[in-house]
Length: 228
Image (cartoon, rainbow, N blue to C red; front, side):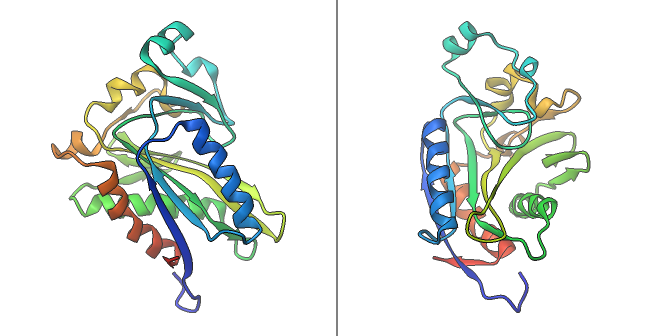
């Protein structure tokens, strides 16, 4: 954070489980309130039941299951308004939705994505995991396996020049998540690389609520917030 700028207040909220559609509506509600300065900027941290989401760069052929298989596995499907292709959300994954203002002055949308990646890279480093980037793909990688997907919508502000962000990151924590959910898709349309998780890499279980508590200070420091 620039030392010349005062830290802004941030509200953080953890939700153990919430249906994807309900969380999407909640984001839209909060984005409008934040834009009108009726709510402080917010980071939602949560889990979803098994869900596939297809972003604005969607390729339906990257969903490998038909409607009967989806129903049998209890997986919902949503076509949504974030960037990117298809990804999976489910138990044992921490999802973070930063709903924050980006002012037009000095605006760098790609820089925002890199900073969000760095939040997760910094947290992983605390456990001896070397997270990194692949220049052609958004997200956080450990070697050739993706541990966190990132997809953002930049909602144009109606009250000032700039944006309010929505959607966010999905961090894989539980072992075997690649076989459970990602096996039914071509994750983010990337066929040549796989996925991994915190537990697959360390052999340690990590509860999403604990990960949320630990990631929050990294997020606040990286984006210049204080508890609100």
